[in-house]
Length: 194
Image 1 (cartoon, rainbow, N blue to C red):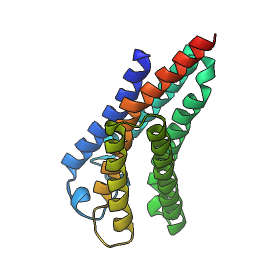
Image 2: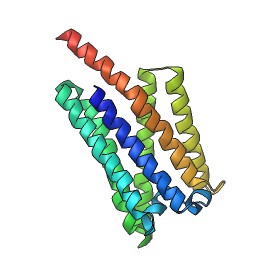
Image 3: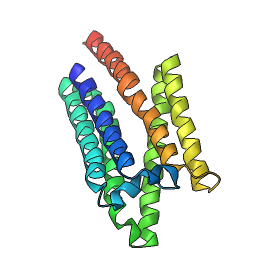
Image 4: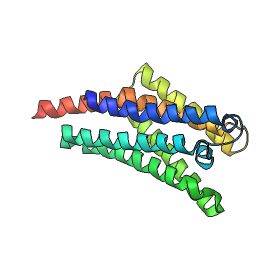
């Protein structure tokens, strides 16, 4: 179980730390109405952007594999992580052609919306499973980020990056702190049945 927690932490720490590197290289994306994907369109930030997403995806997949290795009955939770990895991969891959046409831009935006909706649904499920002050705080952080992102898309405020970052941070905190508790609870139930 420690191994799975380790992989989940690595997936989030690497993603966020490399996005922070991107922020330090091009801080204007943070303060203008730019989203996270804008880092994928600048030569100076493309490497940390690709690395952040790629390493996060790899460690999510390793965590899913490790879950299955631990107990095949945890396949639903492994699928949850694999779907998360797949959606992140689609966001990453759709970053690059998005400036070539409105169609690709719309596809990229729609994939991003699906990713954030999926993360929010997973977060609600996590909080319903383990309702603590910490899990409620983390989903509140995610909701605040989502509201900021929505208001930015509607052009009411211009903090899309901040909304995306804060929302993803809330989700990431749920993923690394509360999701493992759900896994441990499920594993204990499986062991007691055996």
